[in-house]
Amino acid sequence: MPAKAQTYKGMKDYLPGDMRLRQYIISTLTAVATRYGFEPMQTPIVEYEDTIAGKLGDDEKLIYRLQYGDDRLALRYDQTVSLARVIAQYPNEITLPFRRWAVGPSYRGERQQRGRFREFYQFDLDTVGAGGPLADAEIIAVISEALQALGFRGFRVLLNNREILSALARVVGVDEAAAGGVYRAIDKFDKIGAQGVREQLLQGGIAAEAAEEIIRFTQLDGPTAEVLEAVAAQLGSDARGAAAVQELRAVVGYLQDLGIDPATYDVAPRLARGLSYYTGTVFEAVIEQPPIGSLLGGGRYDNLIGTFADRAVPTVGTAFGIERLQIVMTELGLGPQSQGAVTAYVTIFSAELAGEALRLASELRRAGIATITALAPDKLGKQLKEAAVKTIPFALIVGPDELAKGEVVVRDLRSGEQRNVRREAVVGAVGGT
RNA sequence: GUGGAUGUAGCUCAAUGGCAGAGCGCCGCACUGUGGCUGCGGAUGUUGCGGGUUCGAGACCCGUCUUCCACCCCA
Image (cartoon, rainbow, N blue to C red; front, side):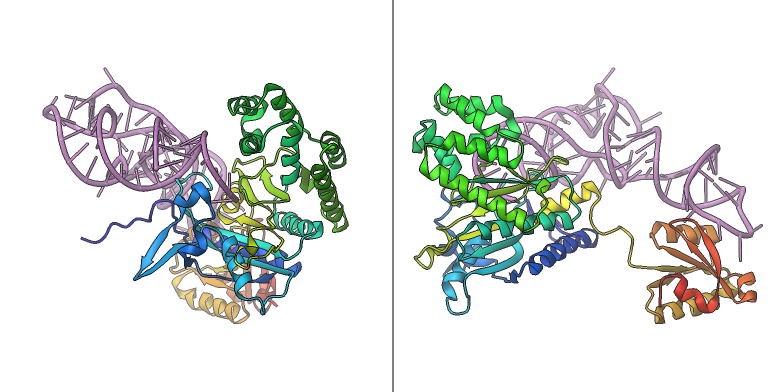
């Protein structure tokens, strides 16, 4: 008995039909990142268990562990830890600030949901060793441009700063131990609404008055300048909060200087982000339709990259979810045209004229035009249908009349228009040189 | 990982425990030199998979996988 043909739970095969879009996504992201001077990098999927474990708290159980002989290993949970290792391991090869991109799979043992798999690809983009708001703005600029390059129109990159939320907690009198619960509740605002957040806050032991203030704060929305103003007013008494607002203001200012379309980002005090290691600016790209959660997330994490080197290495970065982009782009009809790689379809009018068809196809191929022919002298209708189904732009017909006149019928299957073309001009008529 | 849904034709979905169906798509013909429009005709199938209950299971029970939702987390 052969083994059962089945992929492991939460993991997917990507057949040629899927790969066209995946490769398009990756090459588009790569092109934008490269234009901003980010350099490629790749690290192993397998790391020593000690490299990955001990940093995730409750999520330790999501790590895939494996053993080979006496070696205790793990599949990477994300690419950030690997980046931290590389920074510590090659101090002489890498000059800071270091802009790098990396694409590849990571592994988490979660139950599968839409856009959430046990093996998932991320396109990571990080700037290591730069602490200021310009590095933040640059990453956000790449995000905005990359999503536009992929064809997205209705997306928003939500911007916030971790310290703004910390300051909010202090200002409304929530003690530090409860602050984590507040962030988690706030983060769900878009999903469960004000009433849902209120319930969750009260359930978490937050005073009713404080809860109302938190909700009012997280509902702030509107023009960037106004939102920043309102946030500043609310946190005025908190020095660190005020500094964070200034930082966010600076990020937005740089985005303007970088020429990023203001319609693609929003200051959003409700954005919390789950990962506990963020220290400053945080962001997340969302899209109204179709529902998918977030397309990417990221932020500044100044304390994580230095853990291997035992020093602070300020870093800001993001991770695009390839599968999520793939799902959403498929549903929105974005991406490369479904048109196949073949340009011309040469019909075979009759068995006697097959030679003419093959000679014509041969000429086209020599001219660099991807060409297929019918494989039998079927009815013309059937042949044209095959070409149409394969979304081939041009169908060529050489019948007795054309042969006698030294012409070829060139039919544009997209428009339905056709014309007779001199045999020697056919290559030009189908777009060749 | 916890709780809950889900799976029937290529697709979207029907079918009191009693002959597996519809629409769309697909194929053929009308159309012997032209795909899309129209008409007529045709085939859709291991009802996710494996067990069990029953005279009889697409339906009920158990297991498993898939997809999805909530929790958790996040790409």
